[in-house]
Image 1 (tube, rainbow over the protein chains, first blue to last red):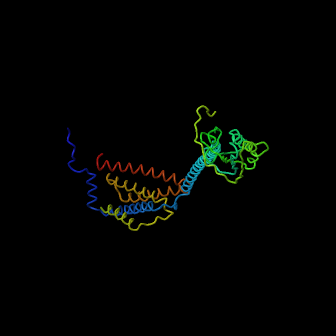
Image 2 (cartoon, helix red, strand yellow; image 1 turned 180 degrees about the vertical axis):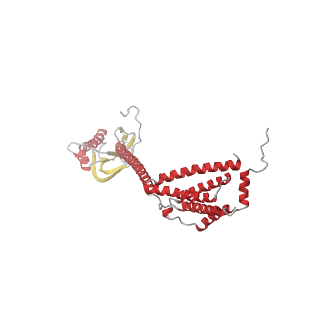
Image 3 (cartoon, rainbow over the protein chains, first blue to last red; image 1 turned 90 degrees about the vertical axis):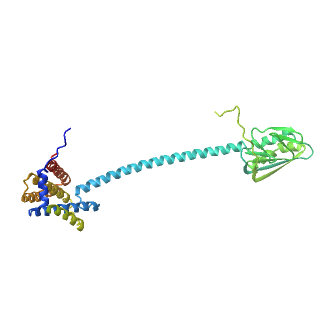
Length: 246
Length: 110
């Protein structure tokens, strides 16, 4: 393995440089002045470069380039802004559509739950009180009364403040009263019906209508028109076993 | 030795006084500094070659600076100042590289 070559005496160039450093000659003064100038100018330039963030001293062309660059940036930013605004509008209209749909669904659900008797309701209506004076009032007569109320658009009905009458409600004869949906209801029967009070009243008291039949049966009917009536009773929702929405 | 001291004194003076560059000179000072650096490296190379002459050094220094700044000035007047200063920097950079390479060969023989 060859030994690294170690020069016995330093190369002549280095010796020359060393001699110049050790023994300054007078002609170096000129060089020193110029080098001082370079150092001064260099430092000045570096410092001004650090400090100078303004556009003073830039060439016209440079300024135009900067301006063009800014214009391009502005345009890109504006494009981005309009894109984002479009996205925002889309999302907003999406949201409002969804809200409208939700509202509609909610309204529908409210209507349906009133019809199905799932929620307590309030509104104007009539209170029909049927008392038995001389004899028992027949189930058919009661049924007739309910049917009359239904045909004149009663939106909700209840018996004696405890049984809600809906489309599926059943009526049966029973000892000491009637069974409405399996619940014993005893006379006097109080039927609350929400709807147009005049129309409901009319539906019960026309010529040979329910009022006449009740008197025939040996009872008495009293109709109160109320501005506001609360129907508190509800039915438990039942799941349809056979019918399916189409 | 005096030369090195001169360089240090110049740098020190620059730091002490922190002069503001006149706006008219602002585009030319960097070019002038690079041109002066080229002259300095050229001078060092000539010294190591043994052909250094202080008169030649002074003249080349001054002419380098003046010509570099002048070219850029003319370029500014013609509306191509930016491109010309780039060109001058490239040329001076190449020269500085070749001078430094020669100096390196002298000092390190490599």
